[in-house]
Image (cartoon, rainbow, N blue to C red; front, side, top):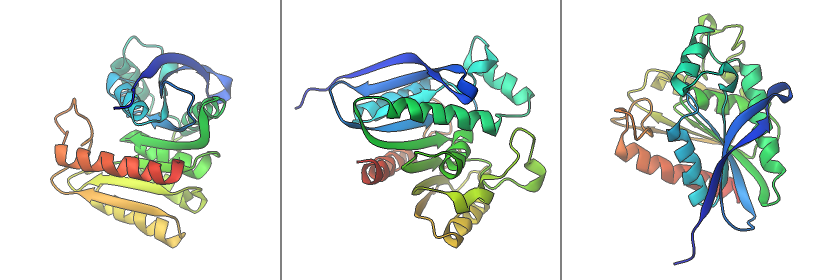
Length: 247
């Protein structure tokens, strides 16, 4: 067996408007070069489960960065930061995209990066990953895991989230993988179908997979929504997608 080792730490990066924010960086030890992945956390916050996802990518040979998109709330826990964000009407898209761009720039400055960067997001992060693929430069592949709100209805548009990501599909710059649960309600199967229709209309490279007997958050091993059959197959598809487009 080859020697295996990785390094993980909290770092400070420059996000939206050059703000300093926390991020969690996990990477294999060694000179590389390695592909990079930005992990966009879910609405419950910058928590242990998403840092664990970062370490999983590092184990598979990626440099993973998990920016704390709720850093500016300044509360003691991810739960409190999330509650503060919800009270304000949700994550502001312009700030989130600025922070994702800062994470991409951080990866691209590393001497052991192979030059490729992917973005993956879960739940609200799936919506933000889709939005990033349409609006942020320097992304080579996107994976949106049950991204609620990609196909926002007009009544769901807010000052914080002024445009439905589906309406920007024509600007999608890279291949996109979407993973869904048939029992989910946000996104519902109808939402996923509407998004697929937009991707087809604009001739984008994509794959969608929907899992039976699975709903929202089926990857989340620490939540009751975890579904082992969907998560196991989903991880295989995640690494196949990034393997194809980031190596």
